[in-house]
Image (cartoon, rainbow, N blue to C red; front, side):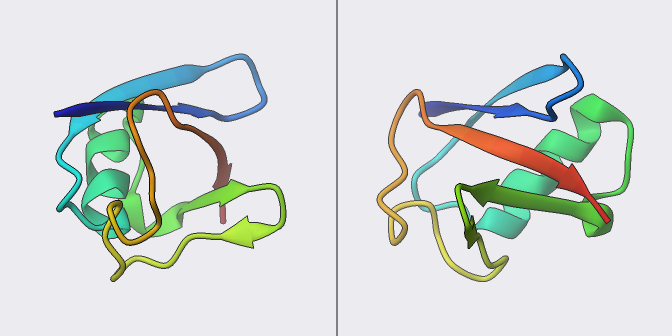
Length: 73
């Protein structure tokens, strides 16, 4: 298990635990459960890179303590 955090730049920081084999889409669903929003409207970024739903965390080399920038469409 790894712990990932997502900051929505409005002061809300969400922490979720997931597996490295989970996809970005799975991570969005976990974040949506905690934030109360829809996972379809969540966009995860780091700098200028936008993370795609079908790729696993392990493929992106996302590790324990990684911090995403959380945006909503």
